[in-house]
Length: 234
Image 1 (cartoon, helix red, strand yellow):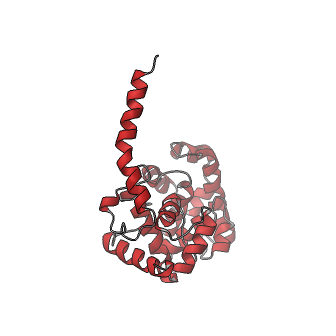
Image 2 (cartoon, rainbow, N blue to C red):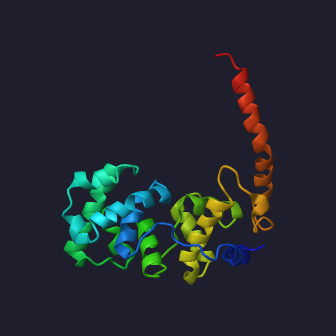
Image 3 (cartoon, rainbow, N blue to C red):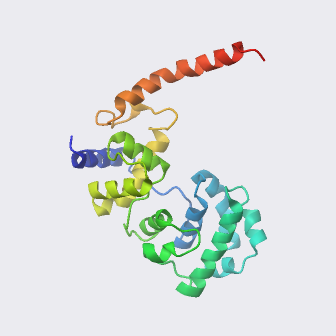
């Protein structure tokens, strides 16, 4: 099957299974999404969603966050990875929004990427989900892994993976595609134990034989490790 045909099948089938696929960072406006996405770097969405209600309540606008004390922001987000650096980024981001953008969220990758704590991935998340502007494809660990397993790309670098996917899928699908592959990676094609028997892409997946073989071996390997550990001298 040609990659272009595979891409069409992947999108169509995942859309049927996950019609509700969406950004799982809780937010009610573009500013909140921007903050949540900055916090989500090397951190789970679930953990971010635990922290952000207090953050959004205390600093509901760029103006308020721009005047925040660093210690106060750190205290609110201290359970997040790299909370000290991220606290500086949040405040710096808010200050630049106020000073350079009149507190509005920019609508280009270039302008967003100038904000502290924001790179291309974060910019794509905000533009696609807050403004329905498809400037690129968000490539997180789930997207990179599932796209590679399906045979949509042979690349491992996120930027190169994004370029490959952008060539295969029409622009209007880019934001949805990220959500669909993330849902696939979190719910079915789980990294530690892919559930190939439940996947509606198993007949077109380039890695199906390897995954099925690994899945069948997993229980025996786990058991053997436990046995060896128990038998080893203390």
